[in-house]
Length: 281
Length: 252
Ligand SMILES: Nc1ncnc2c1ncn2[C@@H]1O[C@H](COP(=O)(O)OP(=O)(O)OP(=O)(O)O)[C@@H](O)[C@H]1O
Ligand SMILES: [Mg+2]
Image (cartoon, rainbow over all chains, first blue to last red; front, side, top):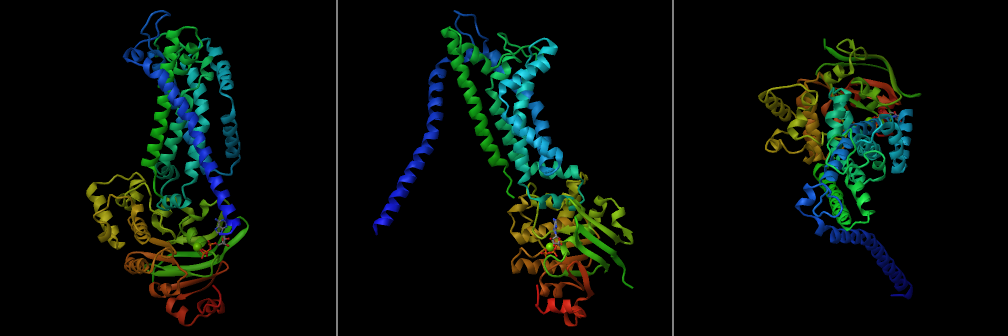
């Protein structure tokens, strides 16, 4: 072997090592965060942690039931609002690639994706909270739904765009009306990708705090009334972590772990659904 | 006197300003197999897609002239109705990937929301698959996804799906171009069978295939219908020099 080839092989080895090194570097922050939260959070979690609401300072045994229930409700209502709108817009965009409306809605979806969540919170505050005169869970849901929308729209559009035109033609050539083709052929074939987009959007907003500060606001008691202020996990973490009391810090750690597990679980489910529902074309 | 099922009168088709099918006059007798031939890009697919009104689905695509099915202009009928009467098989097999073999066959009913008794569905499925020469191969795996089949089987599944709707005319756009010789042979055999009940219009680049399966052949050149005659006549004694050149392989 000549020295030039040796040099090249040497260079390539160095390069490969660097790539592997940096690839592992991506994993380190995740592992560090996971490890830290689990270490701090796991000892704070027990039965009463799930079923009780926070106790006043100094009393032991408080829990995060109000925030847990609140998070589920706020995120659930947001999903109910965002999913149909998002999927329908996604269908429209994939079906009408060149229309003016498609151009503008694609643009606005892209911009919406970049709007800081706190700005969305403020806007919803002025649209809903102020006119009604009270903080409410539903206004928080609206803010979160706005944040989910671009993710759902884009993932639906991208998924459906990948379906071959021949599939649509097969349906239409059988005398199928347009709406049936969409509902019975296009949607079922793209369901894996659409579901994963929905799931990711839920995971994405589950930990959002800023838009809830001036909308859902928070509530020390367990509430299921969506027209009233409601607590949520990220709000609880924010409030308690910045408080001076150790008991409350503990709740915040526990809540952080729960939130983290929730998001992780959603990501895993997403991976599984895409695998299970992925349709071989 | 043969009964004419499809007839066109000065039929033209366009993609925007691109004039693709020019003043075509053709009469297609019932229960015949008509082969449509011609060099690539001469408008065969476009013409075929005009017959069942698939052409108009493409943005900017238009057509004019008369396209008659049993003396009634298909452009005066509802496109859905037209497509139920005139089935289509595409160049590449396109079974519905979300459906089983069974459901693919009755897709035209099922996806259109037509309710049927199980026995009736079973009958249609078995009948269509048998006529498409696929029944023996798939009768034990009817509830597997249609996309697990080989390319040739998928194409026969698509044929079964089309004939399950009992159309009067079946359009086939190069149905064997993606298939190996054995699958091609079985599809050709099937065309022979289908001729008894249907009128078939088949686009093909394969002259042997046209000679084997068709009663009449239409030769298109640059969007014009140059010659249309008995297949035998056309291959042994073409009248137009362009047809002659094509058949003798002077251009393709
Ligand atoms: N979707 C389309 N949009 C615009 N023009 C098209 C489209 N499809 C076909 N054309 C044009 O119409 C002409 C005829 O095309 P067509 O597909 O009918 O030819 P063909 O005879 O079927 O060719 P081939 O044997 O290659 O399948 C071509 O010149 C092509 O440029
Ligand atoms: Mg073609």
